Structure formats: C-alpha cells, structure tokens
Length: 133
Image (cartoon, rainbow, N blue to C red; front, side, top):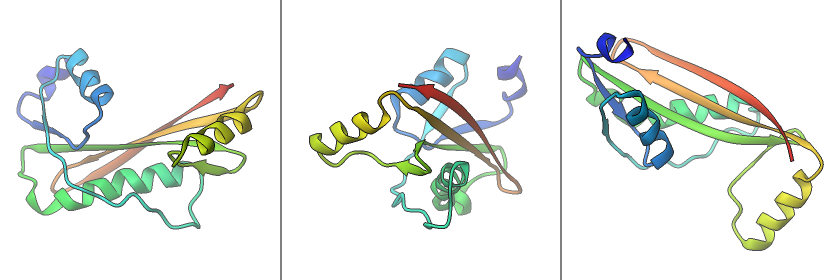
C-alpha cells in the first residue's frame, strides 16, 4: 500500500548507511542514493532530540535547490543521549571504552530523527528509545 502511494514520487535517500538502505529494501520501496558531504556540527544550546532534528535537517540543506517536484528527500540522524549530553562517535579505542564504561548499569536514550523534504515542504519526526546497558 505504501509503495502504491509513492509510485508517482522518486524517493531520494541521502544516506550511505547500509541499515537505512536495507530498511527501504525490506519495505519494497525503491530509493535512489545521493550523498553530499555535510559537517555534522550543531549549536551547543541544543539538547536531546533538538540535536538529531537539527542534524537531519542540516543533511537536507545541500539538496534543496536541486530537488524536482516529484522527489522526496529523506535524511536522518541518530544520537545517543546520556547524562544530559550527546555522545559522539569515539575518536579512539580508549574513548570508546570510557563511553561504554559510563553507560554500564545505566539508562541512556537512542534518538533518531528523520527529515522528509520536498520542494515546497519539510517535515521532521523523531523517536526516542530508552535502553538499559
């Protein structure tokens, strides 16, 4: 039913993530992969889902001038929220170890935001999953 509703649209997935690509494949939805580099930095005043919303929208920005009327661009970002701050990707094995140690025996949140962009409209949604580690 979803693929029927989308048949007049071209779905553009701006993600190199194999998991995100497989998600659409599992739904039976054909997507075109388009990638543009984006520096994933966010204002420090943002917190929680505001960060992933901002980054998902930031990833859509470079495409806005090139979208066609029948195209829907999908961008996304996921963060881990723990002890009132976003955990970034560890830069070393030691940092990864400290991160895992800080999350042990505690609850953190995994927040994913998805931004749907058309020429005339943009909509961002998010989901929060609590995880005990």
